[in-house]
Length: 165
Image (cartoon, rainbow, N blue to C red; front, side, top):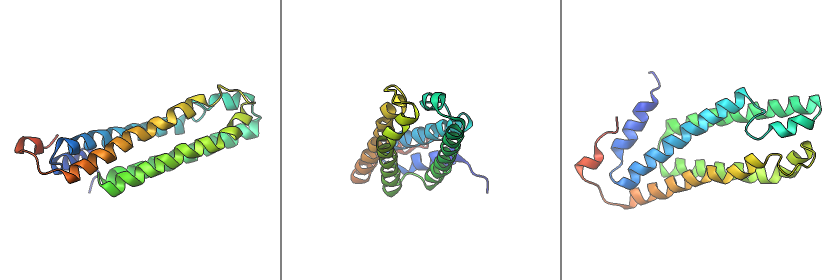
């Protein structure tokens, strides 16, 4: 059977009975696909989106390892996000995705001194990554809260349960 992400969105939309659920579907799928596209771009151009400053002053072997690790990490994230998208909108799925995002953001704060050492201690080096890391968490936390509210709410009207597509 052919994989159809639009059908996943449509089925998830139809399964939700309140505006909390509809908001969850919109936030979840918009974020997951933006996340996938960002990581595909980062895999194609690994020394972008905040990593280029570290490669400017690093030696050749460090730059090669930095590029390879960024590509491997981003492709792993792409396939993991595709799995999450395929699994759909459930509290367990959203909570796991949010937890993984939190762990990923926390890992950037842990390795920041090592990343800055590659960039010779430049305070602006890798600032983009660190400043945007919390914004990865905000949509997933909102979607998790909205889905929790959806599960606690009573069914909506027939107009609210019409398919999105």
